[in-house]
Image (tube, rainbow over all chains, first blue to last red; front, top):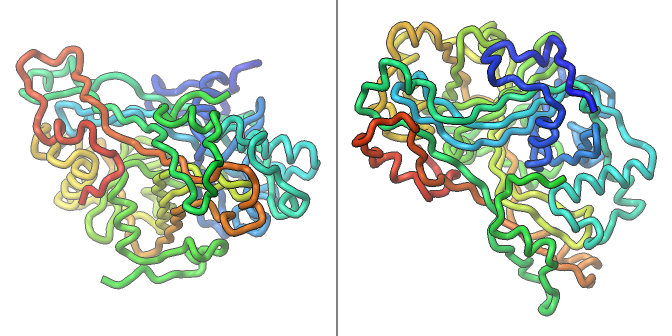
Length: 225
Length: 225
């Protein structure tokens, strides 16, 4: 696999030290999450909508109701972007100006393709389900013909992407501000899966499957490839 | 205060039961987070960038380097959107088709205004800082003239907004699928501030201030108004 080739719009114009184009880094950021923010344009207005995604190799899959505005718009072959962001902590500096956020973010650009082949559609929906909860595709009832018809699947190639990452302590530790009597450091932020909450109408005797039990208490931001 | 008035583009076209337009709900979603995804257009391409925000009454404030592409683009008075999303859990249904995410999301639409008045600029930057870490504006060194000149502040009016919220168990508890031997319920997701990590070069004897110590261990997604 080759690295992502930076193009004009994925060149990070500012803070070049935070710009990375390596394919593996983009994959790692995508695989660590399951909610992205999709950007698209309707009548000159930018929309930003949260939704789920999956990844299979060099392709990101998005799905939704075939009747939704987002899916109808994007099925027409228009430019879009997909951004995945993990917030890792607050960077508390001596000065307000140097305050920052530690984060990992990937932005993918491209024109999506509506998936019409039944086998690819099933494989794409599988990647979406397994991306969120590995094991669930084999455990839950799979989509039937009617449900497949109601669902649109979009494929976006990972050809063009940019990454921004910030890690580490504040930047003003070697500045004149370091002499101030001001605490400086990072306040980390972490997300974790909590104890499963059964559906109130779930019949007694249906056990929690091991692949879901295994998630509880674990960090939510772990690679799931 | 009046409720947000739904306009054509903030009408949630699908899933109307998840659409709410109440001003207080938008405020609560904004106040529970500190990272938004900003949507804007450059040469017909939608961009989606994570950044911080603050709120003061009916105005959302965004800031950044005056030299950044996002700030330069948005300072020209073009349409944008600001989306804030909190992911609260995975909804594990009997069928793959009914899987969902519990979440709260607000999307604001509008054309931002570049803040040039010095007093409003300081007040806006204060709202940004206090939104993330209440108490920090009075504790850290405030921006000087040079830093203020390097920083652009945008104001976006909360006139036009939409909200989507999903809560509760899966929707297939009263469907034929409820007879399947499949566990169903919600796997909640929660974020929390972790123990503060001091800057390695922080001199000994500078204590952690109480307003930061108070955050550690607390949920990250709490109202901070």
